[in-house]
Length: 233
Image 1 (cartoon, rainbow, N blue to C red):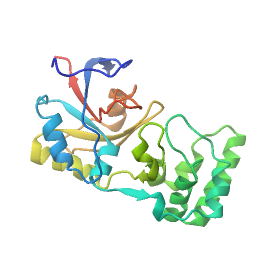
Image 2: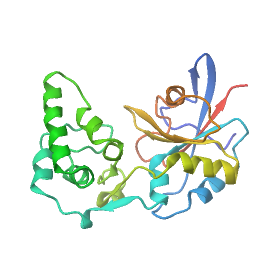
Image 3: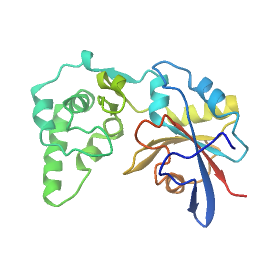
């Protein structure tokens, strides 16, 4: 395991339900749209994988491989998107609907009426200090949209990255073809969401989220989309 490491300021070990787990961050190159996730995992993960490990995969990498992107040039910003985005809260966790393009994506996906309804209830929620109302209504497709942000990687400034299609199926395919047990996660320094996992993983999502609760993949330029999780023997 000498070639594996942790990201800076991230812990190698974490205790979950009385057991210790190691989280090794695996570097990759800067993945481009349309690459093959099976080839990426074969190249970067297989040399280190052991039976019993769980591979945590960044949803962004799978989405890029699936070409699940929406380009700014193909979107026409409406007055509604520009208007509503002015009232949305910003977050350190990533791009939000304070970005007009993400708001426009929500309108295109959910329709104007639903987005207006969500915005009104979100405004009421602010009065009672309740967060996340808008995203709870519009759903994970909007919540999980990444990209439209060039501060970390300039390449991501011109397109948004949707959540993966059929993440459970992707994990099952990875296990069937490569023998690697995996889960696909949407993680940042504020929250972690399990989008999909192999059928062979019997642990519930709450347990799996605890394994990566400190976001060992990091949130900047680490280029570590794969976290290999190993139970201490």
